[in-house]
Image (tube, rainbow, N blue to C red; front, side):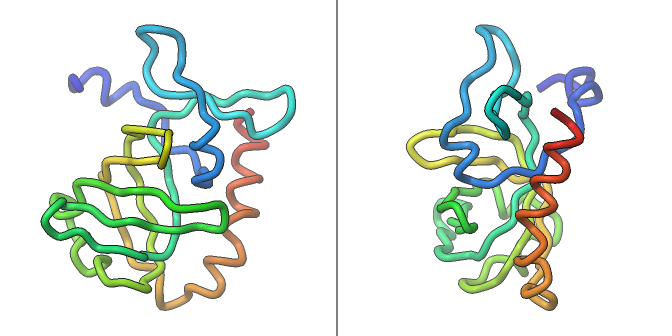
Length: 140
């Protein structure tokens, strides 16, 4: 992606993996996908913020599988993310920001940022769906 395109990319949108499974590619030549957080609304997304628990670490594949309350999703490029390696343990609750690379059959993103949220994972887990719903309500 060019530097100019990177500067014009909108901020990340908080999403659940289940929302990415039903996402549709934007018009041909368009960047990213469209999710439908409500019945008549649509929201364009390309850079996402997701949270989940690490269920599988694939060191040879430079990736992990996470699970949130709506399903699993793959995260690639984790070894290239600053401070990403401490997040790579099964059972850790982490946040990841990244670019969507696939939505079906399993959502996948290429990580640009990761952080370990395990210290306050109970609070983060309880609040996550509410945070997603609120941001999407504001943006849509």
